[in-house]
Length: 175
Image (cartoon, rainbow, N blue to C red; front, side):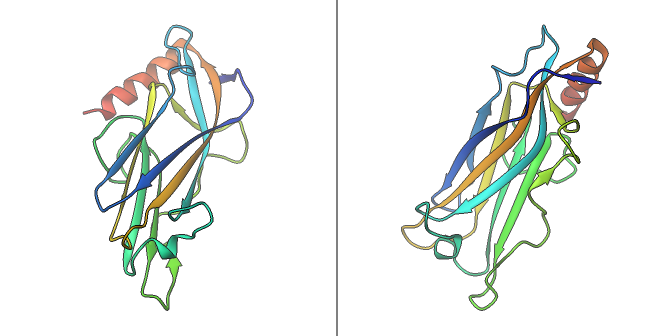
């Protein structure tokens, strides 16, 4: 289906949450995706790294107890967080902070997202951007939550039929 054009590489973007409003960012794929050459980005895995206000501060100091941090990557701009069955969803993570004695834990959304055993498998993206949406519960006063998104990907060439099928699926997901 896909002929690999590059080895695996990593795209990185950081989102900073400063309040309970949803925060957005994008990863530009315009240099990697080419409709004319039927070139797509193959996502192999996505890692989410949660940090506090500074690089050496952990998340517990920034997030108040009994709150959560949610982050998602989609290949269509949905304008916010989506349900897990949305076809545009590429990866997601959720981290919960319980009462002080319980600490941090992950409950319902497993991460990192991994699309296969090796570099030959992955989620194909033909859109020119990945959209990051993140939201946190109550933050401690004067604190931030930084979420670094690391997308491990490669560039692949597709047959005309395969590229068209992925493009149609992506367009259908827009409805």
